Image (cartoon, rainbow, N blue to C red):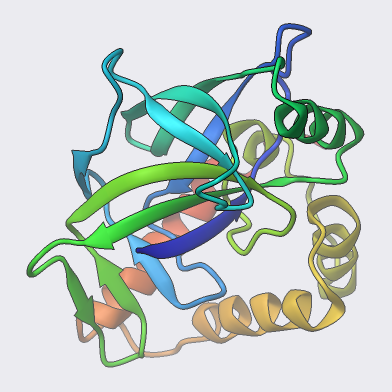
Amino acid sequence: MKHMIVPTEFKALGDAGTFEGYASMFGNVDLGGDVVERGAFKEFVKNDDGKVVVLWQHGSRDPIGVASVKQDDVGLRFSGELVLEDATARKAYAHMKAKSVRGMSIGYDVLEGGAKILESGIRKLTALKLWEISVVTFGMNVLAGVDTVKSMPQFETIRECEIWLRDELGFTHGAAKEFIARFKKALVRDEPPRDEASAEVKEVIDFLKSIAPTHS
């Protein structure tokens, strides 16, 4: 089983231990070099109630709840419920409220023919089997969590963007610089897209433009 980590905002964290967000985002390259295509989740491991297990930090011995999951045009949306009778779930709940834990991650397998390495080195994922989603400490995918995306501020300088990535999304100094470098390289591309990798970059840029706020 492989893992893919994304940050999210637990805006809908409720007193009963309910929470929601996106466990995976479609169409953007994370800092691990993977991009999940729309509709990539083909199989789901669910319980008798049709829900996916929620783990704490991918620990198979630490289930903390269950979640309903559904793919939309943005990503893999989930609505979860923590089992607050469990001590680990209460621990997760406390950290989620304090925002000391800010990420979601998925545990998945790549189905046959479901991955392709592009010339750029990016791995495009098109067919996945979802085993679980996890509450985790750190994240890699800046676009995860629709509430986080819609509140993305406007930046006047690259420095301002780096600070936002570190202070608001929990990126390390090096990870923030790497993220900026990737998209700066894409934005200064002179020639039109010539291959699938370039088309992938264009899709990421178009998505970023579509979520940019119209006012400060």
